[in-house]
Length: 444
Image (cartoon, rainbow, N blue to C red; front, side, top):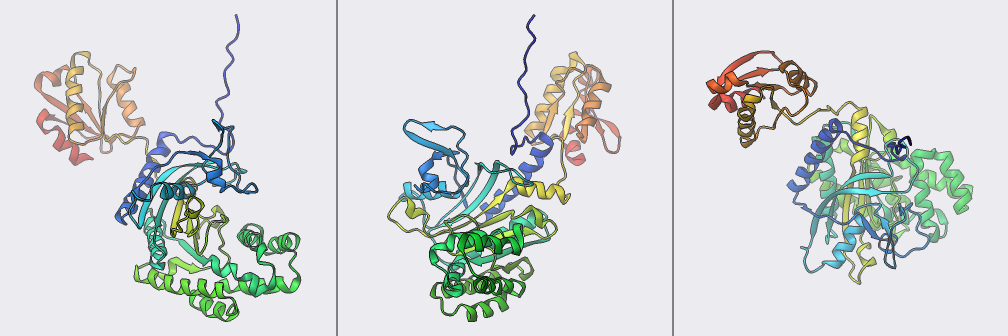
């Protein structure tokens, strides 16, 4: 007899299964985020997980993002899995310009994929929750996004976090300030963005090897980055003096000044945000404001809520130049962080009440009870497992941590009553059928 060969069920590295205990709290987290986004006036949108590769790369053959292709093919088109939700949004705005309001405030939750090396809090497949304002060039729109970020972090129970803010125009002015070819800007910004990962010595090494900066240029950059230790007001003052010869940098500084006034007006406390000149954001489509949120109790996890302004991205798809700003919650990374900080209280079930089903003669009566509970919006279930005795079914309720147990056999059916047990206090009492909902509601 041929022995059955089983397929290995282990997941590939960088992917993760979420079992019910995790999914329940994860969904609750996402529901809170969604509610806040809607409170701020954002509208839902959904797009396919697969896009034409050209849409994602912008036609750039040297595009450096590690796109997860997974052998996708569609007719004559090369396809790829999306690496974020922002590029698909730009495509949608270009395609449906006449059908969308302006400004268009959209939110979207969906899975994204990147073919990169997995590490703590970083997966190949991950969930993002985005909010974007398309069609507004006002700095008040940037401030609105930051205010949204603050509300989300606060309502998720995260107290020790910092939203770090910068402007890419200031960074683009580094070539004037330091004295290197502006064509090297992308490399310089990419290296600066790795400051916390590779530290200053690593940054210096890469700048010398990749951009060929000399010691005097390195010292000027250090003078620039050392300003991040100052207060936001002091940074604005110092950077205005240092980079006064750069028109593009001064434009970025003025935008920061305006935006920070709006942040304060929107009630975001000063201890929750700071100007940080090292924040560059790795994606090349950012054009002005950039920001990211770190957990000060767990900085090693990296940014959990980040984004910026990308005024040129829609022009990839049409002649129209439409301004936009937005941010993304890294749901999986934030979930890992909240687990580490013990802010996640896992639940085994949504069920608040279970009707035990141990007497065949009373099964229809038990079904009547659970139907009544559900019609009154009480999350409930009837026992459907293999245990046939009361003790075995009660053990299931205890294992699942269901707070209320309803017991009904033939005797209860004949008298139109139900035994209701409070699992926590272990108290049990008999009530009439018409009083069941009222009693259960009090117990839960």
